[in-house]
Structures are given as C-alpha cells and as structure tokens.
Image 1 (cartoon, rainbow, N blue to C red):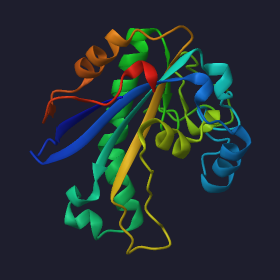
Image 2: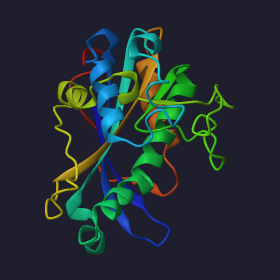
Image 3: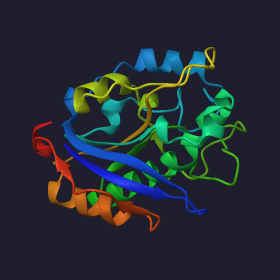
Length: 230
C-alpha cells in the first residue's frame, strides 16, 4: 500500500493534516455480506430505499467488481478538530468530516475511475443529480444512471473488515448516545473496481493530479509492501 501525508487548507486559511492511503486488493478477497449491510442500512439510515445509490437499489458487489479493487481512504485525527466542533453536538461533529473528507475522496476516486476505466464506489449516498433532488427519493426512476454511484456498504462490502484487512486500520465513529466520547480519528473510504488487471503505474499519478489546489504534500510518500500484493 501507499500512504501520503497531505495538508488541506480551507478558504479561510485553516490547515488540517490528513493521511491519504491507497492499495490494490483482489476482488475475491473483499469481505462481503450483502444481507448484513442491507439490514444495517435499513435500521440505521433514513435514506434506505430513498436514494438511488442505497439499498435495495444497489447491486451486489460481485456484479460490480472485476479482478481487482483500489481501496482509498483519507483519515483525520480528532486532535486537529476545532474546539468549537468538538464541543458541539453529534451532528456538528459529523458534518465537519462530511464537509471536506467526502468531497476529497470522491474527487480522487472519480478521477481514478476515469483514468483506469473502472467503476467508482463511494462512501455514501449518490449525489450525482445535485442540486436537484434524487428522482428515486421522489418515487421515480434515476434520471442520470450513467453518473449514478453506489456506496461500498450498499453493495455489501463490510468496510470495517476491509480496512482492517487491507490497512490494519480499525474504523471509529462518534457515539450519538455518548456525547462525551471522542474517537481518535475519523476515516472516509472509497473504492474503484476494474474488470481487468489494474495498471499500477497510473494510480499514483491519478491520485496526485486529482488533488485540488488547496491540498499539498507534507512528507514524501511512504510505501509499505507493494500495491500488487495487498
């Protein structure tokens, strides 16, 4: 796998150190349990059956995948959170992550999918029609099926197991019923699947070129093992 230390700079000049990592995994090694993830979405998310990228509309991972998948994540340590965010309610803490980690991982993942001719798999519900409301949510058919995206979880991927298996990272979450609890870090995870073997030489260039102008490198890239053997 490969790990980069990057610095994200907001429009007001605030800087946040982030960790960006990626690796390649054989698709048949990806932990999948579609029944379990669908049930978790159904009981824990109000977008179940109300977004085109969510269950029960998302296909099984086996139908999306090919030979390999690029797994890409961005991590932020909560010690870098603004004090006002940490002191705020659950929703404020969650939105802080969504504000830039989701857009950053989506931007990189979509660029990788475009350069490799693969399929982008996101970390959440489909946003392809924004600012319009999702047609599926309105009870209709997807108006933009080519741009439609599905989340890893929606396709049945056990993301917690995937991250432990691929990177040795244990995912953490805020606890809505325990306001005083602060996890050590938060992580956003996306993937890119490809039906043929992935050209490893393209990956790093795509990642670097997809970074927006407000993101810079902190330290040289750290390689752990090789992309092909994860």
